[in-house]
Picture 1: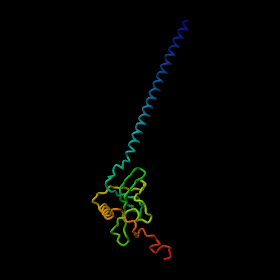
Picture 2 (picture 1 turned 90 degrees about the horizontal axis):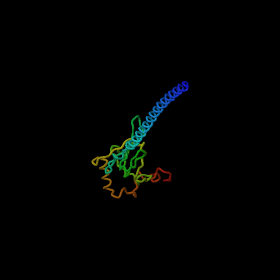
Picture 3 (picture 1 turned 90 degrees about the vertical axis):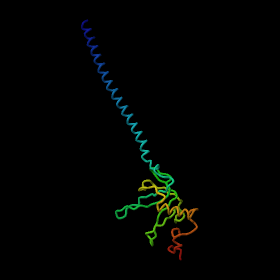
Length: 191
């Protein structure tokens, strides 16, 4: 019987030792699970903060002074190593990471006879293709843009144009820009 009681003691000790090992392993697993859960929660929290702030990283539209004109410089490629820009003036009415909407659009052009004196042109019926007075520009085509002060030469020229043309440009007049090739004598009309 002593043998039996000794076996029972050994069995109890072995069972107790085994349960201690099981408890220790369970505690380690609980700690690992806790670390993984906390890590995932921190990762999700950081991702949420990043996504919330990345939307705010493109708060470029808040920099637009809506009651002022803006100049928009578009990427125009390079010429002899120097970068050239196409520049438009107007009111930015929408701006996000994909596109910009520019309304009330003007641009400068120079004539070949007097290149030192640029002429302000209103986008619209004055061009051969007669576009609406709105441009939707892909954001990746924009080099930069800036708000313009009212006392600048471009804004003064725009205000002068508006004063002289309160109803917009006279679309019934033909200009050099709106004449068709046939009317200038360079087309195939037989003239």
